[in-house]
Image (tube, rainbow, N blue to C red; front, top):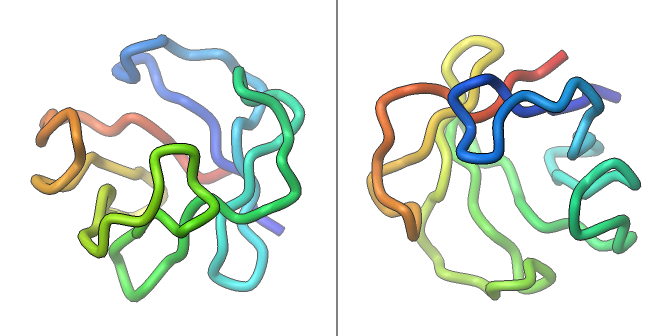
Length: 92
């Protein structure tokens, strides 16, 4: 099971503790996430794209919010905050 933590380029900065964990192509918030653990997947991985699920607090959008590039996760152009250019997360 892989973990995901913020990078220094994340709007909230680097935290060190994992905010998410990956299980079976689904991404779940951990107890370290600022919004807490929910037990439901917030994102789904399809290829190199990450999509919000219906369990996400902001709901399902049908468009990818993130792109996986190596062990880094960048905002996609369809993210609500737009494309940022630098990775927000890293897979550890």
